Amino acid sequence: MNADFLLDSVLASLDTLRYSGKLLEESDLRDAVQQGLASHEYRHICSSLCEELKTLNQMQECVSRISGPEDAESFQLELRGFLLELNCPHTTLADNLDQFDVKLLLLDFLLAELMASRLMALRKATAEEAQESHGVPGNLGCILKTLGMSKPPAHVKAEQMFSKLIEKTKSVLQTAPSGHISPGLVAKTIPEGQWSAVERMNDVLTKEYSVRREVLLTRCDVTIQSFKWSDKAKNTVDQFTKLSQVNRDKLKCVALVTIAQMLAAKEELLVVHRTGAEGIATSSIKKIVMGKVPDRGGRPSETRPPPEMPAFRQRTEAPPMGRRDGGGGGHGRGGHGGRGKRVQGGE
Image 1 (cartoon, helix red, strand yellow):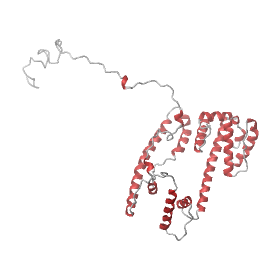
Image 2 (cartoon, helix red, strand yellow):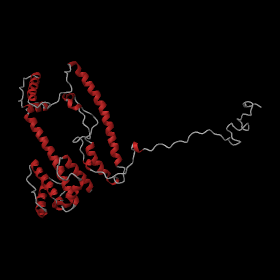
Image 3 (cartoon, helix red, strand yellow):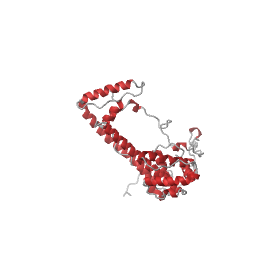
Image 4 (cartoon, helix red, strand yellow):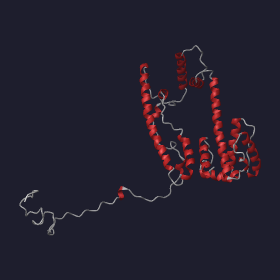
């Protein structure tokens, strides 16, 4: 597998897992992988990934932390048993840790397994919470659990239950700091007869913004496609497509905004933050300092005035004889010597 592709895959996985170490830059990651077990960062991340995998999957095998490359033999022995219990398809992965591609492949495999293990643990926890709610619908069960309320009796009416929920919510909000929750955007109560109109308006807006999202996504696809036209990308088109498609598949054309979300919207949504504000738009590319660029000018104060046109002068010399501009004294067809205009077909 191509090393550049593996580097991009590992960096993307580290970002997905909210890794906060020193290997978020490609150059740092490449140096650490190149050093292998001699690098403290490489040893630390491998051990940390194995420890979390052992905890989430309740594994028997483990990989102990090592202090340096002198413990490489014991590390490879434990790693071999650990990968075997994980059913790793790369059977000789622990035996070739002196190769750059193999060390990258080890990181890529451990990161992928950790993402899958975290997802499975989250689903298991969600299923257990659903069972603890004793048949209460999901969202309602979460509300009851958040407010610290017990399951309502089976014979209770919906109006009574929601009245209790509103009363409990108001009492909890009174203990919150002032301004902790901004007022809602929908301040008035919607009459019962207008809910159908609200639903129709929501359907129209959903279609409208779905079209807008489709236009933006089409522009995104065209931009991504343009990167494939360069000579450098011709040999890695498949890898580039695979990496870009991971995030592209998450973007959907349908803009799903429910009426419940509209009712829950707060006034803080009306505050538009500048994209350049600190903490709003952070990107690793902003850390790159551009070198000196040539001055292209363009400042109004440096604009030169247009050249002055020569002053107008009355012509004093007569035009040369024989010109057909009407000033030849009767020698031309349009001269002043003729008595009248010549008519087609006349003598």
